[in-house]
Amino acid sequence: MRIIPRLDIKGPNVVKGVQFEGLRVLGKPEDFAKYYYDSGADELIYMDVVASLYGRNGLLDIIEKTSREIFIPLTVGGGLRSIEDIRTVLRSGADKVAINTAAIQNPDLIHQASQTFGASTIIVSIEAIRKPNGKYEAYVDYGREATGVDACEWAIKAEKLGAGEILVTSIANEGTGSGFDTELMCRISKSVSIPVIGGGGAGCLQHVTEVINDGLVDGVSLASILHYNFIKQYSVSGSDYSNEGNVQYLTHQANTASLSRIHGATITELKQYLTRNGVACRQS
Amino acid sequence: MTSKTAHIVDYGLGNLFSIKNACLKVGLTPTISSLPQDIERADIVILPGVGAFGDAMTSLRLKGLIEPIREVAQSGKPFMGICLGMQLLMTSSEEFGYNQGLNIIPGITSKLQTTYDNDNRPLKVPHIGWNRINTPILKEALEDNKWKNTPLSNIKEGEYMYFVHSYYVIPEDPKVVLSNTTYGQNTFCSSLRMNNIFAVQFHPERSGPSGLKLYAQLNACSKES
Image 1 (cartoon, rainbow over the protein chains, first blue to last red):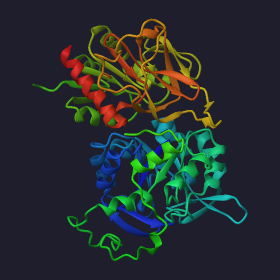
Image 2 (image 1 turned 45 degrees about the vertical axis):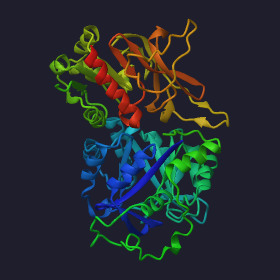
Image 3 (image 1 turned 90 degrees about the vertical axis):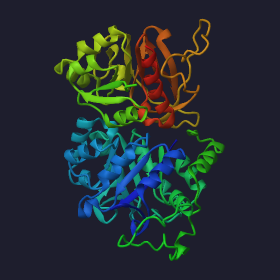
Image 4 (image 1 turned 180 degrees about the horizontal axis):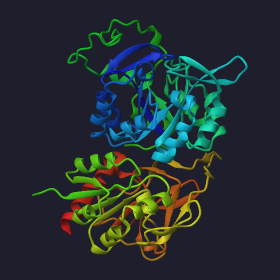
């Protein structure tokens, strides 16, 4: 089982919200990436959260800097619109790319990208919300825009077009700590024969075994449960975060009530827990 | 002491930057190009690759790289094939019909079949993720430490490495196999060595500190030779 920390990146910072809203600044991507690499992460995901709205900045530098020191697979997503965008990110040191908005708008991009860079380089990211009729709808632009596209049908189509993996995120559960939407994960996993990475909602270790056993995922993407644990030990005194958004959490002024469902853990603790529960994973 | 050069053969497929970064990290001087003369000049040659076997052979042929690579194999110069770069060394592949390979190592490339784990969950193909490498058990007397004097010499038995592949190699001579890896009901050759030719199905440059040990040893082996 692959444990994959996900860093949502806004400008020079790692941010985290709840249901993709109310983003808090948590620290520098370089520090998070190094810490997770050293503590046994199996891969990393960088998601540029504002790129598809405002254009790109700084991310390429972060990729280049970290890929020199971090020797595990790195997936980069957020605002990649063309073969050229994908090439640029890969040339900076990413191993795989995650595409969502551009793929929905132009599904042929998946085919072209898969032909150009190999299927194993192309992850299609699906962010979904459950509808009253029980179906899941795919959203784009970091969970802001509905598409009318059924998430399962889209996953099947993405596989046919040449996607190598699917990253599924439940928008409603994301950042809440209330557990994964295992129903969504299970439906997508059963719809495709390529690996599925599930994300959104982990609040404790048990949630991770649930998404593995009931959601049938092949990898788990995690943020809050790891991030909030890491920053407890992380000093921000040396960095200047003025004008960088909501830094209340870092400056200890935040109302942390909304985080009460997040029971932080290290990757080592998580992997030991998974191993005890019969899930094979790499111990570093 | 000058640093050894490791030439990464660029034939248009795959992310070569992580290989370059791994070389730099262990003190090798990496070069990347599709020029045949750079293969001749280098101390160590690395054949990477992600993608389709047939496309890769076509690209190597168009760039005039097939003969230079075969010559390196003859020369005794340290050579490492990675992933598709391992599969290309074989005689042929069954990927999308029959494809002729570089025929440096007698054997074939075959497709992983989807199998099931003990809980009856399908193990998906491509095989993506971390898996163990183990010394194969041969019928004849087991040599003491098959990995000695190979780039695996500092790697511990059963170490996890990072895999991304749908095909695997079956060398004709089982004695060239350095390690096997088991995925569901498939047990396949995950690394091999024949003389100066070393090849791995996993990606050592994406396999964390263990993978870097392999690069460091590749560097050290080449110094002895």
